[in-house]
Amino acid sequence: MMRIAARLMVTGMVAVLVLAGCGRQDDVTLARQVVTDLTRGRYAVRKLIDWPNFVAFEKSIGEEYKSLPNNEEKQNYERAFIDSFKKGFREQKGSMNAFTGWRMFSQKDPNLNVVAADLAGGKIVFFVAVKSERGKRKVVELKLMQVLDAQKFEEYEKEMSQ
Image (cartoon, rainbow, N blue to C red; front, side, top):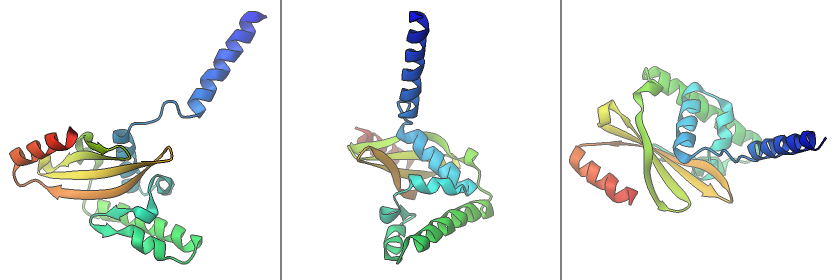
């Protein structure tokens, strides 16, 4: 009887830990998941984006988002953004396989981590900024940077990762 009770207690504890998110993804995995879900047009990804503060490719999505009058308009805006991202990615014949070398780029701010992935053989770097606030992590920015001087960029990356 004691063995059964002990097994049930251990099983219950494991279930609680899993459900509580003990196996929380790191920011690199989160960034990659968000980008993958955006390219596939998965609407559920909306919960992983900080819409009021979101910047995508130098455009302040958050400013437009905050100006919308109600939640219905905001949900429509989220859906339209996700659909447009998917459409643009497909029109460019994009592939998630083109993103290589996913890594933590910068952790200088304890509440904001920047993840990077290479495109076009390292000639372009794709950045995803992940903000942590009150225990929740959300993407706040997507950005592309063309690498003109590989050596200078490598030095810059070393500086940012320290």
